[in-house]
Amino acid sequence: MPEHPHATLVRKAYDAFLRVDMAALRGLMTADVTQHVPGSHPTSGDFKGQDAVIGRYKRIFQETGGSFRADLRGVLVDGRGHAVALQHVTAEREGRRHQEDGCLVFRIVGDKITDIDECVPDIDKDDVFWS
Image (cartoon, rainbow, N blue to C red; front, side, top):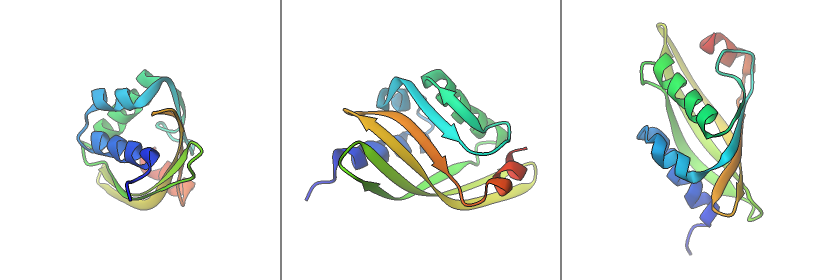
C-alpha cells in the first residue's frame, strides 16, 4: 500500500533539510508558511514566510557549526491536512551537546506545508542550549 501523500511530503522536507537544500524546502512550503518554536531563546518564536523560516534554519546550522541534525523517526497523518513527524535532534554548540526526541506538527494544504508547530520535551533545557 503506498504511503499517504502528506507523509511523503514530510519525508521530502526532512531530506531537503538534512541536505541543507533550502531551494528544495522552499518548493515544499507556501509563501506564507509559519513556524512556531517554543521557548524564550534567540531561535524561538513565530517565523512567518519562507524567508523567515529558511533564515531560522540557516541560523541554527550556523550556531551549531553545521552539527544540527533532525533525524526523522516516523510520520503520522490524519488524512485531513495534519502530519506529525517524530524526530530525534542532536547538535553541538559552544562545547555543549544537545539531544532530544520531539516532534513537528505540520499543517498541509494541497501539496504544500502551511504551518509547522515544534513540540519539545523540555522547554527550559532548549532555552539553556540555545541561549
